[in-house]
Image (cartoon, rainbow, N blue to C red; front, top):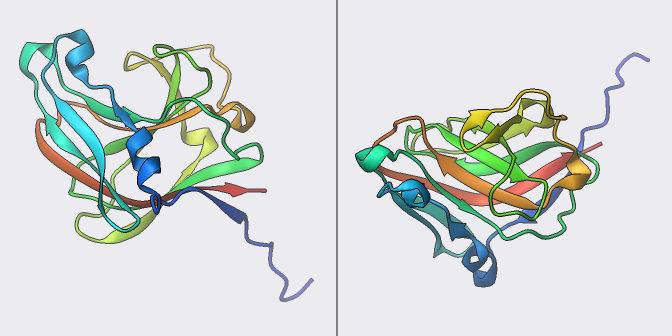
Length: 176
């Protein structure tokens, strides 16, 4: 049909950080679990804005900082992509998803580098997520199944030493 276009995907906001309790749920999992000294946290900087920030150190074979939610049911069953509204600082970050309730296990990661200093929407299609275990890609693991999402996380790694700050307005999914 002339002039018709495909319908735009629906969007479901998973977290908008309007509730202080949402930010308080995120816990750091930094390289201290393996002897490093990096540190991070997720805190509110104002109404509805979360700050993932801290310092990455390469001392003691470290080099990563991350935060994640506890496992819970998310409204992701029909998701085709995650969308984050963020303001970066020039660093590359990873959005991570876990599909089970274990502390240590497979996580799916998608890398993004938001524009420094400007708010932008970052779209991460499900097929961009790579299965990893302790930072290493794992072969022969099924693709990320959206109905299995249990925990969400943010990470900075890849030897990006020094202070960092990623501001997050909201995290959503696009659905079919």
